[in-house]
Image (cartoon, rainbow, N blue to C red):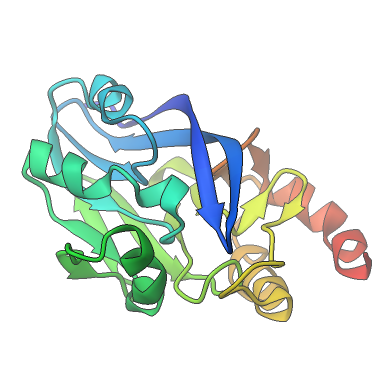
Length: 207
C-alpha cells in the first residue's frame, strides 16, 4: 500500500491587526490509499476534499491558528467526520476566527499520529504564533512546517502573538537537527530541504 503526499494551492485572505492581505496557501494531505491526515484547512473546502479523494480522514491538523490556515477547519472536520486538532497556546488566535467552536483535541509536542505504517510527529515550534507546530514524517523524510519555515527564511514575526527570537530558536533547535535530506513543505510558497536551510540559516539570523 503506497503512502504519499498530495498537494494543491488555494487563494484567499489573511487578516490580523486590522490588516487584510491576499494570500496563496498550500494544501497538504498525507496518507495511503485508504486513510489520510489533512494539514491545515484554509480557504476552500472543495479543494481539500478533492485531494482527500474519498479516503477516510483520520484527523484535521492545524499548524497554527491564523485565519488563512483554519478558516474552513470546522466545516471540513464536520464534513469528513474527523476530529480537529490545535495546539492550546493558539486558542486566543483561534477564537478570533471561530469564537463559537473549539477544536476537538490538543496538539502536544512529540505526539504521534499513525496511518498504517506511516507516522506523523508533532514538533512544537513557537514564534510565528505561540502554538505553532510542524509535523515531521520520518517515513517520507518530510516536514510540514506551516508558517514557521519557508524556502526563503523564517515565518513572519511582526504581528500580534509573534516572537522573532522564539522562531529562530525553534528552527535552530527543533528543525535543523532533522536529517539533511528532509523535504520542507511550508504553508506558502515552494518547498525546500533541511540541507538548504542549514546553508542559509546564519544569514537569516543576521538580517
